[in-house]
Length: 327
Image (cartoon, rainbow, N blue to C red; front, side, top):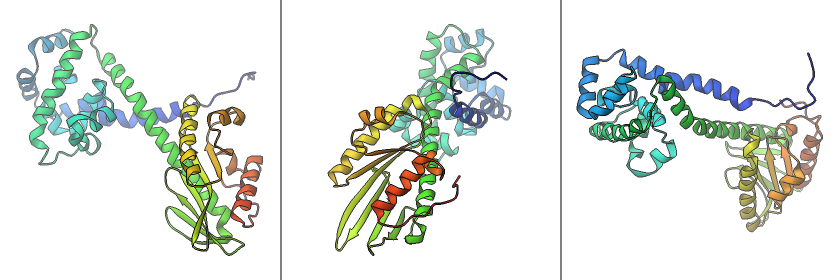
């Protein structure tokens, strides 16, 4: 096997996309619609299509050998499987944020996410279908080639950013869990108590130090001196593995650190999950005093782990012993 002179890139996002897509296909794409229609009366679907959809639009869809419900959500289908709201939303190119966070459609979010139609919402199913059918009629009028492939392509184009955003959130949570586990392991000899969001230690000066996981910053480390609090470290965790978006994430960390600086923190750490030149990263977040790679600091044999451990020990005023590999 030949060795490349260039680095081998890791397709982590695509692998994650693949597994997510398999699940989504069964809930929101063609397979979900097909499985639902199998259990419904075709004459009833046809009647509702005739009642709600413009004749020319139905005629155009039929001319490509396709059934109308592939494009037009009629009430009997939506009531049978409310999650199919996601199918039509994706087909029409409407993001979740645009659809559910703006305008009057937020009340329908449970349909897509949980497959639930409350009694309060049920009378609104017909107006919802009429609205979406109107959007679909506009789209059909501007498309010259209709096919199952066209439907899937349009849905995937909408789904891509949604998947990426969702996976970045998962990566972020996973990274936060790793950091929590790492910190707990390092400070365990000095740990006095803990909650799901905080580690509370007593340092070598018999002072209480709280390591709190929240947001803005993601982690704050504060020492209690008498009746006053002394902010020590503001930590931002950016756990996404997508290097193309790293500059935006560093910019977000900078904004958070600037706020923390206004609260009298004096150390600012940014934790990333991609390899990059920290000197370049420093230009985008000048407030950051230290950058750390989240995966590197999990490995006790890595220099970054050792630097992280020693700095933490110094700031917390506790002794931290060498740990076995935490992965």
